Image 1: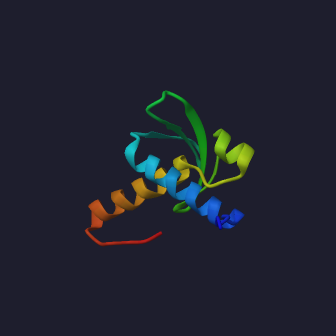
Image 2 (image 1 turned 90 degrees about the horizontal axis):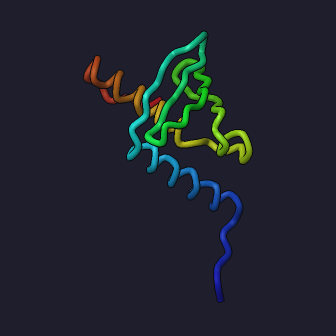
Length: 95
């Protein structure tokens, strides 16, 4: 008998895969206006990332716009921010 995966389980697995790709891909961030950042990945594609406080809340990439999922760009930004804060203060933090 084969097991079927729930939609929630499938979404969690997909988000974990995107987060893993975000850790492997080099991305560059540019603050452009207010809370908007441009994020450019290895592929050369650029997307607008909306950041509120320490959280990336939206992205203009297809994963986010068409599927409504938390994309690798959002995960990569938050991971970068954690690293920057930890390097500057030496403390372990969680956003």
